[in-house]
Image (cartoon, rainbow, N blue to C red):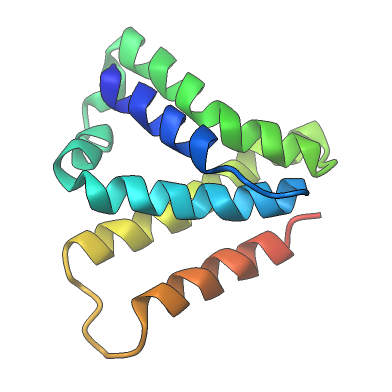
Length: 126
């Protein structure tokens, strides 16, 4: 699925930093940029039936590899990689979905809110 291939390419291109945590931080910002730049394409990734197709599911696994690679590079035990990847993805997806829907209406900086949330999660990682 080209959307997932494009997402993976965006994540890899955006991953900069000297440490795995720095690269995960950059990955978070690359994910957000992809979603907010391509909101209609991004929405297709999380349709209820999106992962029913085996080819789409396989492409999703490939798109997730940059995050898995960096979590493993943090020295996490293998058993913690998937749960932490799910948590990080849930935060990023929830945040950008609300941002795309213009659901943040209480003022304050949306950029700062994303940064604070992402940093908080990454601080908790190993």
